[in-house]
Length: 573
Image (cartoon, rainbow, N blue to C red; front, side, top):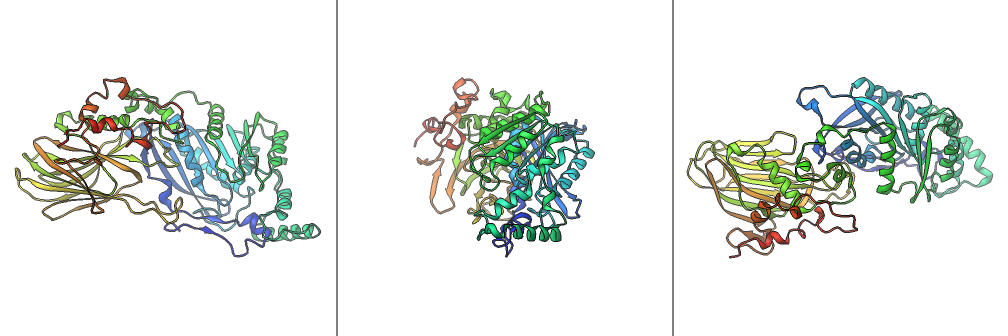
């Protein structure tokens, strides 16, 4: 089902209590929703390792381990680090965990998530609301401990996931801490409440309740081989001593708050309880999530910031990368800061190759860039350096650093490279094209993004594409990028070595002319050389974190509005 997404609903779902318990809607999703295998936060690189783990019942569990990139990238084995395992609720999947990536990984804590058997893209048909899921969890813990990458382990579960954590905790006292969001205390009690709730199309009358529950119990035993009367987390909390934070929505009418309160009162370990706004499926507010992150950080005994966050672009520009990565709900960096970071990244290590960035310009996501390129020596290169700003995502938050795309021509042909902080340039595509040194040629670069998915959030990502060619025809390069980017695209016309690029023109691919370098229009983000020359010297253009505000001026979301001074630096013709 990797190429499709839908909410898979059994035909008798609305009429059978047992289906509500063991076969709720199954959340299918496209695997591209997990994001790229590697990407960058301001404080660290992120690497995702996907693995299939056999469950105790046989079906394979589809799992993902998000790791902060460290010295292992340079041939040295990584030191084991703390890990949080996220356990999703019923009718959900591992995508639920992605919002925690930019909160844990900058602190040196990896994040492991899985689709339980019968959920998401894992095998199996039925769930058991924690009974067999605890064995799935045990297999994941076993895998992580054997990997050599993990030291201490914390658990974060919601609903079914929280019950799973509780059922596992009393048999594995090595767990460092748990966040338990909306667990139930007893499945038979929950089934009784659900039988007379609005979650069934026809409520079970009180006089039929005993018979309906008996039938459901027998049916679940037959289909799933467990007894709902034996699934009672309240019988486990008396022998659990792991620090635990209980969370429950005040308006939850699926698992009422009294379930968590009863478990909390009986829990024998260090504990805390937080009643929050929302119902069973309400996304938790950012302060609630960050409080839970802090709880697990303390339980995991994390105190040292990761080494990769100490000497990077953020440090050079004077802001705290962990603070910026953690601002997941909105952009907080000014546009000039992001562009200056891109400039520093483009120039790093390039002085010997005589890289020259011309005046910065702006184009939309559906644009065609044209320029005349003249290569004067075999080592010369000319083309465009694109600044792509990653779109807000669950896995990356709202403040990702820029990605640079170099679209270059040389005497050897065409080449597209990608550059992110902490990595060597990655060649995305290249094509051999013969043309004479010293003879100008037209270089063309088209950037397009497909329309939005009809089913946003779970279907395939609509990824942008690059097309590069010469105006004289011949071979061309077509590249699909690995993730989605914001609609604003900034770029520098650029050269390396003995080469020239002139008459740069930006056009809309919707047949509407946007601008030209010879006759700029008001819609062009005009050359910004003067602003960028002073960006590192003037504090007001250095790194600045915008104070807390509902709609902060200068956030990346408002990068177009943040750059009026850039246009004022242009020479109007």
